[in-house]
Image 1: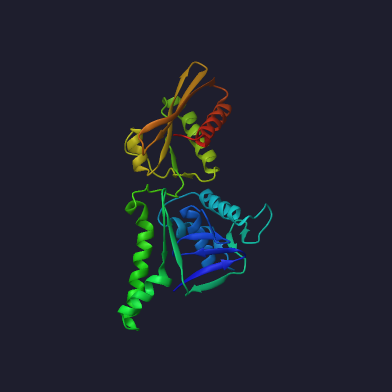
Image 2: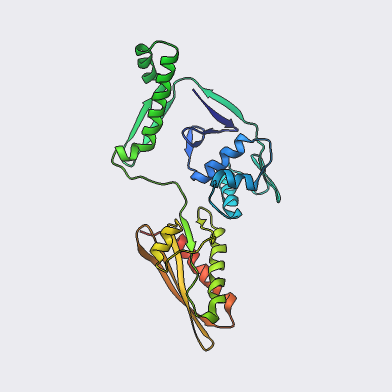
Length: 295
């Protein structure tokens, strides 16, 4: 037996970590689902931004725009249009509240768990077929209750490990994590390098399904692969600034840390007086590269 949340035509299963609508599963990132669970647990009440950040990201330091992106993801999943507040209400400067009527439903009947992989699927009738067999082996009471608990834990573990057991790939639903390193430059061009880094971080922070690592600590190495692993980033943006007289050249590189390869690079030339235009041009091309599919 377990409890699920139902509201409108949606169902949220905390154990299976699934949002569904009309019986069809709806994909959500891990952080979006955690955000939804916190709001549902405190439905009808205001949850401050600080409390949400602490609950979803725990001890990890993240910026507020990461939370804003999760809320936007949930609103899209619920089909909320601009100006609608059927499910989540924003209290400006304070936090969020889940306002839709919610029913807690106990699942006591047959529950079908379908495990899908790239090449196959397995359907387990957990409560319809398996538990009656256990009932024949255990007396009712503590023994049978323990058997149910053990069986359910085994099923949940099997769901999580099924891609490995069945030989399929392990696919993560987490958003890619980006880090932007300080651009290498001479002392007199440090301000420009810092400006490019901060502009890139700000633009990346506005992109859905992208998580940006905070600049709370400096990596111990100039090696981009080592720095990316220390920052726990999937992709790192870095580069250099060179200046000759009134001309500035910026080289930008995007490195896939997991595959240890350069996935995009570009060179930008601009007059020294056009710093802001240069920063905007770099950010625009970097975002375009991020949006482009990569093999």
